[in-house]
Image: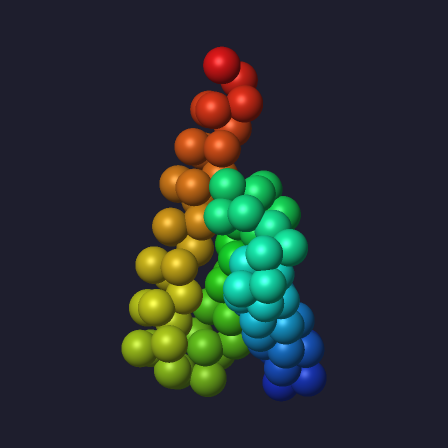
Length: 84
């Protein structure tokens, strides 16, 4: 069974990934069409979903669900573009 420590570690990793993605794009180290940027957003938001649902922070979970959906669609667009 999942415990508080595991959920907290998952949440911290997710937070780090989302902030890292934001920093990378803010300082022009990656482009919004970068698979790295989108994967950091996707995995970060999924980890934060786990954490926020565990702690019953439903508004935060909702935001991260939307965040992950946006990242998924962006990843599909990137893949589609490179397949052409």
